[in-house]
Image 1 (cartoon, rainbow, N blue to C red):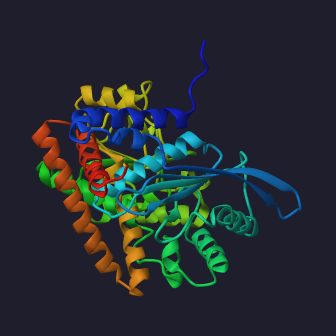
Image 2 (cartoon, rainbow, N blue to C red):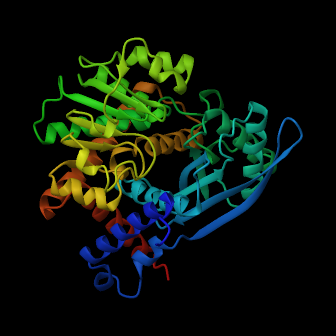
Image 3 (spheres, one colour):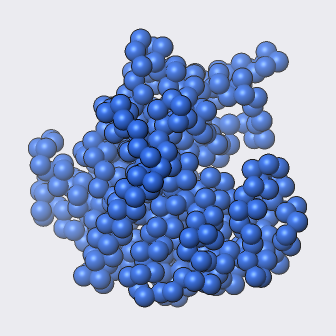
Length: 427
């Protein structure tokens, strides 16, 4: 029997399959003969891989594989996060970089797509000093490939504002001048933007609210399950609880799933996890362990904010929600997407639903370039405008073409990227 494919490979195949279908539906080979738009979205502009030799605090050396994939820059400089995780592989990074290209187009940003990753040893628990050395080594390997007009990294899984600060400082040392727009997701004190930490989760809930308004759905009292309670999931849950009137009955992370029938007190749960760590989620005193996996939670809405391929052919039939919101990248396999479609379960896709993070990263770049500071209220107002416009345009395509929101988002994004390629006369 053939060996099962790695998750990153499945994710990449899913993205590429959707791209090919979209290209055929848009008749790109007829509209732009000889341009080979889809091939130029599937094959990245550049794939950079390199070794990092990380000295541990005890003097030992970890030899790590590192990547940066610059997918496409037809619409502007490359933009995308850096993740540190034991399951990072090149296929995953390629898929994520391609999705960033599409995501920026969906929300109308003048940016292309990129992604970076470092493969960590299983169970790695690096000290702050080790994380700093790793951050600086990553920049060392890419020093000629980054910059505000080239490629602008941001945080992703297991990276954060502090890591961006170390990376920005290393970049500044090489350049001999302070270029704050070279990295986003930085601490506020170093040119970061208000609202960047909350942006992805809040943006997802803004899209949910817009979707509900478009379909005349009353969210008040509806139930929500959240898979993943990191930065995205926790902030989304807070906004759902406090602003949208949703009852969050299930929250899950890699250590388990907790539940409360009348709704969890999300601000208290977030404070608990912030203080005690993700491993202590199951010890939250105002909840009990869920009997079912969060995918099968008996709720109205399922918010997926963990890693890719969370819903697949083996568990898609167990989904009980009528609406899925993708806070993570690629949380559904192609097979799961088809199963859910046949079951008439609505999916709000990742390249629309979780684009709030890159939108506020772009705001951070604009503030840095203009040496400006926006208030949190101003950032969230602007984010609301961008997410509303992106949802409305995608929803209209879905209505006009009688397709899913995912297909509509891909159609919009690829169409805009194809026009940019044609208009620039790229050969």
